[in-house]
Length: 175
Image (cartoon, rainbow, N blue to C red; front, side):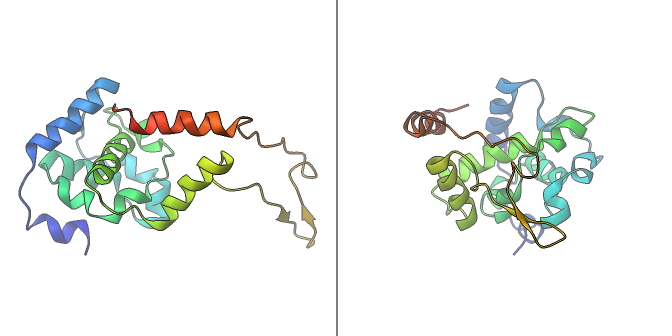
């Protein structure tokens, strides 16, 4: 069931909407009420191209106070955090930050995090990057690593224990 299917059955959650807007206003004076639905954020969204995430619709649902529908939907987990939506917005609304707030609320409510997202977080905690560095196959079927392609080495955290502690601390801090 999609978000659109659920919006006709739900009640507005204005207090939660205001809480999200307060969290965002601490970051900057850019809140969802400034969005006038031009969809420039969606036109640059990498997840929209692949997974049909529509940031302007997320903001529209937030403006209406339809929070539970978004928290219960897997669409909030498809954001690639590229921040293009924030860059493209003429009103400086940041759908990516709304999605971060919704993800945090979903976790706080005990919602199940999708498996691939959990695997990515586990990889960040264990090796410091989303996935281990891979070799590529060229057009002539030769396998090459980064140095053979003239690319710099990927830096990983030197002290993974300290890195994990910092991430854990950030995870429990509230914005």
